[in-house]
Amino acid sequence: MKIELPKAVRMILDELHRRGHEAYAVGGCIRDSILGKAPKDWDITTSAKPGQVKEIFGKTIDTGIQHGTVTVLADHIGYEVTTYRIDGEYEDARHPKKVVYTTDVREDLRRRDFTINAMAYNEQAGLVDEFDGALDLKKGIIRCVGNAAERFTEDALRILRAVRFASQLDFEIEEETARAASLLADNLAKISAERIQMELTKLLVSPHPEKMRLLYELGLSAVMLPEWNVMMETEQNNPHHCDTVGGHTIRALMEVPADKVLRYAVLLHDVAKPMCRSEDEEGISHFHGHPEEGAKLAKKILRRLKMDNATTDAVCRLVKYHDCNPAPTRKSVRRMIYRIGSESYPGLFEVKRADILAQSEYKRTEKLEALACYRRFYDEIMKRKECLSLGELAVSGSDLIAAGMQPGPVIGRTLQALLEIVIEEPEKNTKEYLMRYTLENLFI
Ligand code: ATP
Ligand code: MG
Figure 1 (cartoon, rainbow, N blue to C red):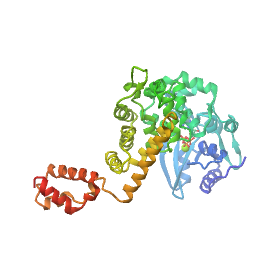
Figure 2: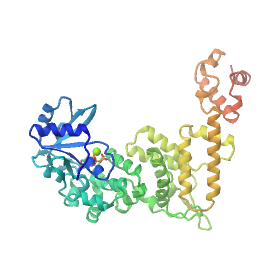
Figure 3: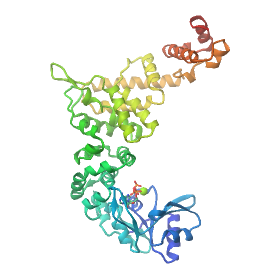
Figure 4: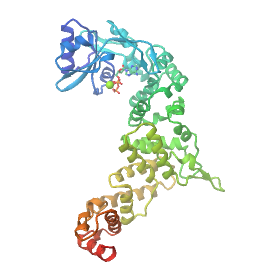
């Protein structure tokens, strides 16, 4: 097998060889190369000790020197060079207590999580594939290196990584590996929220977000996202739906572009349906208030997952407005854009579209027509540059002060009142009209 190594990687490997050390490209870059995908980054594993690596290469950074990792800079790109190591005993289901260096590349490969991630390559030795990673890549299988239960006990994050790789690559999780993941799911409780969120995000923005179902089936979401379990188990007896809340959500995830905000918004758009559910005399389910409650619950969940504020806010806004259906008029659409914010509106369009396509066929044509109409009005409003925010208003706070208004909170309230007039009637967004209106109607 021949793998095309980037020039800088060849240079680093050659330099290490010249000094009498072994060195290989390893892990994700080999997996991706065999799959014919461009690797995100190239990691190197070597028999040289970190001190020796630093001596050989001029520009290095001590990235994780306690674990044997030094970053070598070549052509302004960083390459992580890690000394062959065996992880000692693990503590807290995540971190090895101590790291022991070894001189055998096979020992280093043995500590890695999955067979497909445990291959090394250099031009002299070719592919080192002790655990049949290439075969598993061909078969489309995620399988632990060695005993799955032991590997998941050492580090519970690997359980979630298995599902994440399955979704990125559209692979199956091998039986013993899946069984061990289920059995040890409770250990996920010991993993930090940040790490869980990083894996969940990668799963969601992958080409196969439908693997969210695996989180439920393997019993992982019960530990890390219990709301997802409730969604998967909530039926919707309603003509608009033909699936559970979770099942509908999975279909919608597959319909929405692979963007972090959009995928989280779709994941959580109906999160409050289970708690808002009621049944009428005919046995039909209703979910009154679920968008507002959903926005509150989504915020709680995303906070718990230590999501950044910008993403949390954008997601919650989309959840809150996902079910708004303004009248198909320019004025109603303008009000809607104003309420949700013009940056969020195109996302709302995507979320609504995915939501409709994941519902039953009932009234689908009408729903899609209304959506197309929202889109047309949005394009028109944007093209005409109609005012949608305080910043676009024809008068500013300093105009009001120049006209004699006292600085203070009244300025903000006045501008807000003017904005609401202009949202209703965009042609009134002129300095002349708004100043006259202020002088006549408000207290200057
Ligand atoms: P990605 O494309 O997401 O970067 P990757 O395979 O490169 O995928 P990394 O998290 O960058 O994944 O890790 C690099 C390599 O280190 C992996 O391929 C694997 O060999 C090893 N590895 C990473 N995390 C673990 C872990 N928790 N347990 C065991 N080995 C791991
Ligand atoms: Mg990587």
